[in-house]
Amino acid sequence: MLLRGGCHCGQVRYEVHGEPFDSTVCHCADCRRVAAAPVVAWFSVPRTAFRFVSGEPKRYASSEPVLRTFCPECGTSLTYQHRDFPDEIDVATCSLDAPARVPPMHHTWTSDSLPWVVVADGLPRYPRDATDG
Ligand SMILES: [Zn+2]
Ligand SMILES: [Zn+2]
Image (cartoon, rainbow, N blue to C red; front, side, top):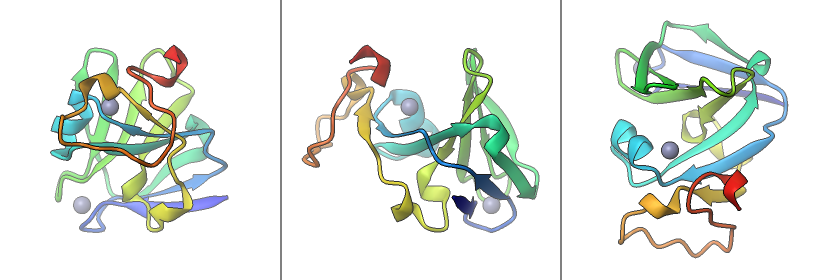
């Protein structure tokens, strides 16, 4: 599978060569604030499957073990990496050119969810990350 994506202004572009092994809609407070959106969809691939092909994203440590990237020009959230999982990278699903190709498998961090976010898609819901289930 080849997936292409990038930020809204087009300055930062990336490619993913490989199959996502996980995908989620994250309800956590950090994703919410970073994206200024009620929830953020992510998919996970091996770090080696992902590369930026144009532009230079800005890096931001949203918490001590977490490094996120975003476009320095338009601010689109692009990736998430956790220090404990150096071989993995999460990519913001809605930064894909074709986000419908990578549907979510579940919802995570629903313990942080806003009261007016109502999910009725039948997917599994986890209060924290999916390994808690
Ligand atoms: Zn941009
Ligand atoms: Zn999150």
